[in-house]
Length: 146
Image 1 (cartoon, rainbow, N blue to C red):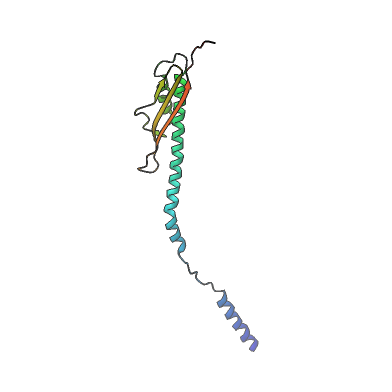
Image 2: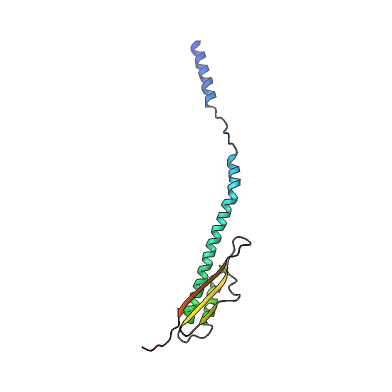
């Protein structure tokens, strides 16, 4: 009998020792998530906005380079660069907003041409506006003396 009582007592101690205790920080994960989620969302949207701004800058620079390439040709008519940049920007999509007011601008001298494209990047975050201004330069093709 003694052996049986010892065995059952041992089982009782072992059963209570294996019973899991509730953790002290029970329910902390939802609270941590509620605190961190707004920060994570702000960082996510900010990184997307920065990427959109870089795409808008690249679009404006490509339009300005396209305008310079059109305007620097030998005996290019006035306005050829602005027309080429406008065609490029219309085909490029809405990454660059407000580029048509005042529109692409090219200044041509006897030896150089400079074209500038201005606008704003597409806004992912409401109320945030990032200006974009890109300029390209090139030499005008012309006949020179040797």
